[in-house]
Length: 348
Image 1 (tube, rainbow, N blue to C red):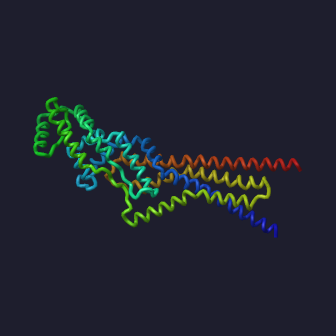
Image 2 (cartoon, one colour):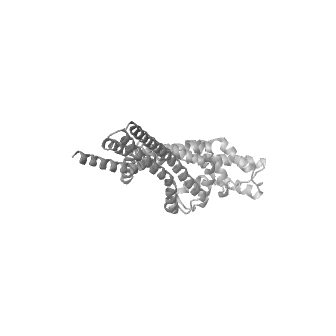
Image 3 (spheres, rainbow, N blue to C red):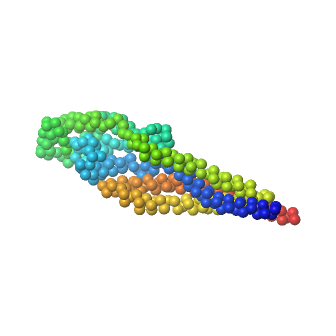
C-alpha cells in the first residue's frame, strides 16, 4: 500500500512538473503583457523613440492632403486651416503644433485612455487648452511671418488676391514673402485668422465613453481578462508547491524535482520571449495593416509599425530576464542536488 501511494505521489508530481513548464512560460507572457501593454509609459517611450512629436506636423499635413475634401471627419480641421494653402499645411502645423505642445497633449491622452481602461474614469478625453493657447499666442503669428519670410517674393497679383479676399470677409493667406509695407496688411490677417480658428476649437475631445452596452460589456471582459493575467503566476506557484509536497523524500530529490521544472520553464519562457515579437509583427502586418484606410500616409503606417515593434521589445525584454532568472535558479538547485548526492555517496 505504501509503495502504491508513493507511486501515485510520484506520478502526481510528474504531471505537475510537466504542467509547470508550460504554465510558467504562459504566466511570464501573460503577467508581463498585463503589466507592460496596459502601461502608458511604454507607449510614451515608444513615441519618443519614433521621434513622433517632431514628425507629427508632416504626418498631419500629409493626412489632410490625402483625404477627400468632402470627408466629414476632417471638415472642422479644414475649416480652421482654410486660410492656409494645402502645400503649406506642414509649415503651419509645425508653427501651431510644436513638440512642446503635442507631447503633453499626447501623454495626457494616453494617461486618460489607460485610466479609463483601469476603471478610474468613465471617459477618456484630451484637453486642447495647450493647442488653443498656442494658436492665440502672438508667437504663433510671428512663426507664420517667419515662414513667409523664406517664401518667394509676393507678386502684385498675390497681394491683390489677399487684399480682395480680406475685404470680402473670406480671408485667404498666400504663402509668399511680402514687402515691409505689405506685411502690415498680412499680420492682422494672420492674427485674425488664428483667433477665429482658436475660437472654433473645443476645449477638449472625448476619445472613449461608456455610452453603449456593447462597449461596457467589452470593457468588463477586458478588465476580467486583465485580472486573470495579473494573477496568472499563482498557477505555476501552486504547481511548484504540489511538486515539493508530493515528490521528495530527501533534500536531493527536493532539489532535483524543483530544479528541473524551473530550468525547463525558464527555457520555455525564453523561447516564448524570442518568438513573440516576430509572430505578432507578422500577424500585425498580415491582418491589421491591410485594413487601415487607404488614405493613411505611409509615414503614419511606418510610425504604427515602429510603435508595435517598440511595444513588443518592451514586453519581450522582461520576459527574457525573468526566464533566465528562473532557469538560473533551476540550475542552482540541480547543482545542489548533485552536491547532496555526492556527499551522501562519500558517507557510504
